[in-house]
Length: 606
Ligand code: AGP
Image 1 (cartoon, rainbow, N blue to C red):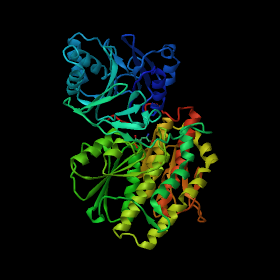
Image 2: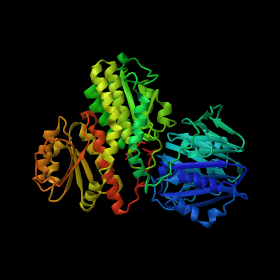
Image 3: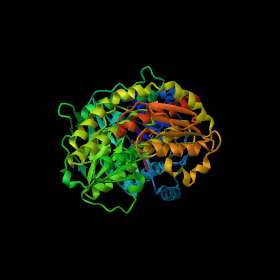
Image 4: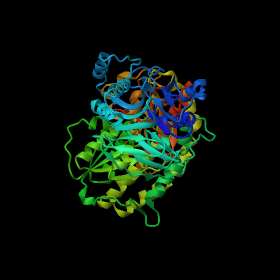
């Protein structure tokens, strides 16, 4: 999950590369670097940490050169420091890389044997020396071809050459890479997002392809070096305003945006005048689908788990879910009448893309639920259900999670209705309840003070549990993940009914435990599980819904009541306090909320 940029221009490129790298920091921010060709040599500058550190270097300010490459890194091999930062360069070649070279140890041994000196601990550096070695006997295209053939694993590459000062080479296998076209300059980027501020004319490379980018034209090649023609796509050019506005962090802004983003999603799919759901151009007849498999990673996997409960509730379809990194290596029994749904905010997650690729290779029905509609997963799926929640910058997913589960709920409702598993009257009631949801989210967002007050207790604890049953269980997992990734505290989401089978041993005096217990079918059972943990000294934060019924339990540390709605929709409301809990906990700890340590917004390596 690194970010790559390359620019071949008629004017100096360093400032534009640096600005583009700032937009790419959502992909990784351990370290950054830039290399340009100037005065017959490769000029390389790198720094640990953010792009700002690189920009501050006086060397960058005076960096010359009209051909250059840049990189922001999320470490896979080697510590996040300036030596391991990209670009990696020999005297003749400089490379930026996103992906993992799985045979780098073997290649390094071979190259050291040829006298090459290595400076870093990275896998990427073998690419530099391999190209340098091959250039001794081959021309550019053949040396690239030969090098790519020797590499095992995944890569998106940007390469410049001391002796070829008018070109940049790009190559792709397993990690996305795009070419952009500008006025008397051309670009290379990890994805269209990286290029959006410079152009909306884009060509995506497919696996195995490579390209030679000059400032006035671009040549594309297939794996065997044959020249090929590629389509130029014109993407929507509206440059989304994605600054923080009055908020301290993107995450805070994105939490507060949720009523709007849900409204957008509902508007896109709910046909108010006909009390129906529009899923335009759905490519399959409902009798061609008898089961659904939902696949994702992290928060997107929690969306899949949430959807499983809704699909079971609203349709007679068999429903399976899987974590993409598991699915891609499982001995899958592919069935023609299964619809495979890939959930991904970025649409670039390597494991999710690999799972999609496996299904495509087995001629399965594939549907993407994504936020970035120009992404690889969206482009390569047969059908796309965009979540329409706008750019999400915060690495910890908030509005995209609610957007994902909204679209999955709508899909379950629609398929249930098409299969006649839901009566028309019930279907209309559920649609009407859904239309009220943004207003209820708005009210729930105001539950700020109580959340702020309890967040320090979570900070002081050595760990916490998040418990829920049924529809609330996926939200318990999501709430725990938010707290983990933002405040670096151990937190575990668990089915409330499972606590007595072991984890109850973890409960000790004063341990904070979140219990999600809206007054749905699981309420009474969850309250008894809550009493089991209170009896052992836990400080329970109960999140339930407003009701005239008294809560039949004592010694609850704090209670938060969300608005009341139809049971299907409680998960949306329960999520809000948990997002805020994680946010305030990290805020009090002074951690980097939009870019938590060790993470990146789009995990494009496996
Ligand atoms: C979300 O809070 C996490 N940062 C992470 O789990 C994320 O959901 C996961 O990496 C999947 O990303 P995607 O939705 O872009 O595929």
